[in-house]
Structure formats: C-alpha cells, structure tokens
Length: 121
Image 1 (cartoon, rainbow, N blue to C red):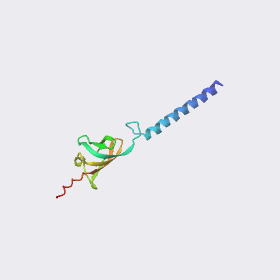
Image 2: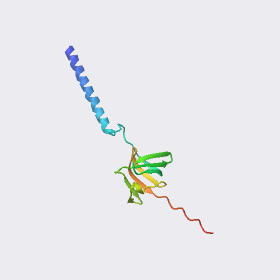
Image 3: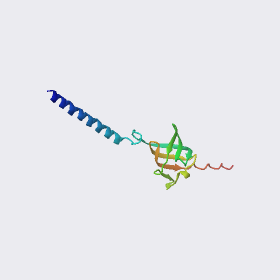
Image 4: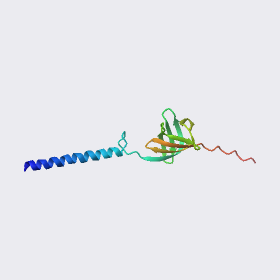
C-alpha cells in the first residue's frame, strides 16, 4: 500500500511541476523579454519641450504633464506626409507619437503656424 501511495504522490508532484513550468513559459511569452512586464501601446500628443538628438529622446508636454519618449532607428518620422529625421524636430513643434512603453514607433511632426501680421488701420 505504501508503494501505491508513494507512486500516486510522485505522479501528482511531477504533474504539478509540469503544470507550473508550462504556465511560467506561457506567461514569459506574453511579456517583454527584458522587463518582465507587458508592453502597453499608447499615443502621446503634445508640444516638444526638449530634443536630444544624441540619445534620440524627446520631451513632450501633454495635457497631463511631461513625457520623455525615445525615437530609435526603427521609428518612422514624418512631417507633412514626408519622411523626416530627429534633426527636423524642434522645441515648440506639435507631435503625435505612437509608442510601446517609452519607445516611439511612429512620430508625426507639425510645425507651429507663423503668427499673422497685425492688420493695418
């Protein structure tokens, strides 16, 4: 009888280990490999406060505060429908960035409108 109980416990224990390791593997695939957390996609809209071309970082002032995003080599940037680079982005520009975490996937740049000349009297 002891052998039967020991055998049943061994099978249950082995099944539990396989179940736990399978769950851990599935969870690992669903999360980002480097951070261990799911990467959220989101949109950042606002005005450029700072640009650091050396690091690829842009600070954007939004309605809720400032956000720093990173525009890497895979980021698609455009201004007026044409491709542009980080060198074309300036403080005061309005941007819409599609991001995953803090990494920018695409960036649309809109230059501020020139002020109208005062009307002559």
